[in-house]
Amino acid sequence: MTPAQTAATFLTLMALVGWINARTVRAPQSVALLSAGVVAAGALFAAQKLIGPFWGFSSVQAEIARLDFSETVLGYLLAFLLFGGGLQVDLGEFRRRRWQIWSLATVGVLVSTALVGFGAWSAARLVGLPLPLSWALVFGALIGPTDPVAVMANVKSGELSKALGAILQGEALFNDGVGLVAFTAALAFLNTGAAPSLAHIATEVLVEVGGGLVLGLTGGWLVSRLMRAVGDEVVGLTATLALATGVYVLAQAVHVSGPIAAGAAGLVVGSSDLGDAGDHRRLMHSFWHGADAVLNGLLFLLLGLQIFVVPFDPREVGIWAVAIVVVIAARLVVVLPWGAYFRLRRNERGASLLLAWGGLRGAISLALALTLPEGAPRSLVLSATFAVVIFSVVVQGLTFGPLAKGLAGQRGAAS
Image (cartoon, rainbow, N blue to C red; front, side, top):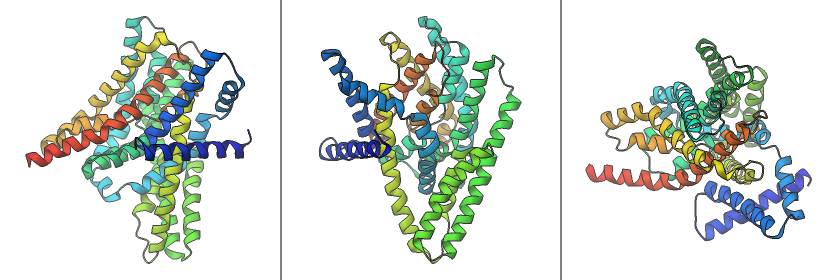
């Protein structure tokens, strides 16, 4: 298939699934599209088992494998999705919650990496699966950061306070840079056998986060000034597109965090005073809202279809379940101090539970897992990552809204 044929196919599938979902179950679009990808792949696998190999199965499998999911996510989609995500965050609330956000986006990611890594390693040893500590820590690093795309979509579905919503959104927007540092360090440990020092990791985090922030904030400020000075709406909109891609690519070139740069740029532009350029703001938000919805849908559809390229062994189902439990438990440990703070100081009922259950994992984790080098434990890490992501998006995604609504009702009744 040519790129144009591939794009037309996926857009048609997205439109069809969206229409069916809107007319029937009305699930969140992310859940519907991811589920559609998994179900479609499952149906083709079942057909192959029943009637034997056929050209349709092998053709689809080859196309999915040819479409490099890691490159698609990390090289193309992430810049737009994080910039669009930054536009949605309330800068004033972000500033008020900056200590919670930055502590979870930095220290929280590193603690989660260690907890999940050692937890998965211990669990694998108990059930007799070959998962060396180095591979377990790689798994902890790639699954540690919450996914900005999944979290942003999830927060919209829940009746959260502004404080908790800002924490979940801000953390997800900025923890990928730290997660990539942790992933790189764990990968170096895997390849060389030499564990990096804490000082080295701290320096890398400071450079990645600080450099990405400076680049994103500077770029966002310059484009905001441009939009305020220029009366042409199309020029202003084009400038935001150039900004989203420009800071991401430039950040990669100078070896700082592209995700943080794109998110910070969106945060500044979305919260800037554009003066008399009100039409700029309306057009910008309308455009980015639509682009965000389409790219989100494409991402979750592709994520579901990765079942074609992820190796699965039914004998590993136990470790998948354990991995899900370990990831959720580690998340609860990480957010518990701030959850307790909001419960005691602000009477936020169920704050720890909401922060833990709302920390979804998604496409970025799988994109990183697919870049892992060949090795005996690679298939186990890949399948465990996919299992955690599917559980996170589908189960946590579907239940987070009702959970938040129920806790909000309890708060209202108590008051």
